[in-house]
Image 1: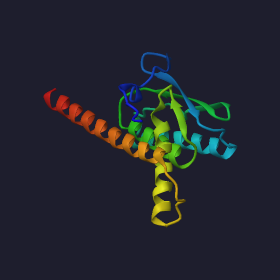
Image 2 (image 1 turned 90 degrees about the horizontal axis):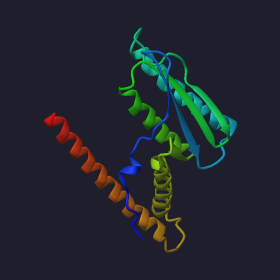
Image 3 (image 1 turned 135 degrees about the vertical axis):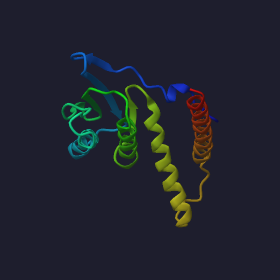
Image 4 (image 1 turned 180 degrees about the vertical axis):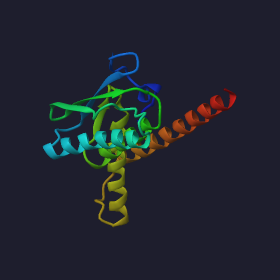
Length: 177
């Protein structure tokens, strides 16, 4: 059974946005995890956000983008809200943030949704596939039929093809602009 991916998987959802003054905007984002996080994992998640903000502030000198550390609140062990106060919305900091969130989702605790977007939940499938492949290499795999693995492989191939097409479309648009 093949799952069809849609633009919904890549859509950035609206966030709680509040303009403090003409130059500063506060954004609150919501992150839902697949499971309850330990206190240590919550602290690690908070550190990731702090590192991204600190890295980009120090690289931009006095014209820093972030005005303070992000405010991170866990309203439940599997639900976090973080607020960033920014002057500039665009920039490579978003790529860095989402790269680190994807790594956290893969290595520590799977992120089910970020602002209602389920895109990080697909990272868990990579981990399952990786474990299965490693068991095949180590010859420790159970002799069993795993249609879920086959489906995941096909979904990943479809996802890679879709992403390639989107990159080509964006490159074409940027070259014509």
